[in-house]
Length: 50
Image (cartoon, rainbow, N blue to C red):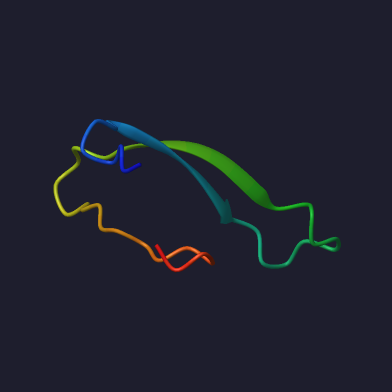
C-alpha cells in the first residue's frame, strides 16, 4: 500500500553533532514538511522487493 501521495509531513532523524562521544548523542528528531520547495517523494524498494 502506497500512502505517500497523502502524506504532508515525515519524521527525519539526522546526526547534528558529528563530534558526539557516543553514537546515540547528537541525533536530532525533526518533523519535515513534504510540501517544502525542493522536496520530493519517490518510491523506495523494500526488502520484499515491492
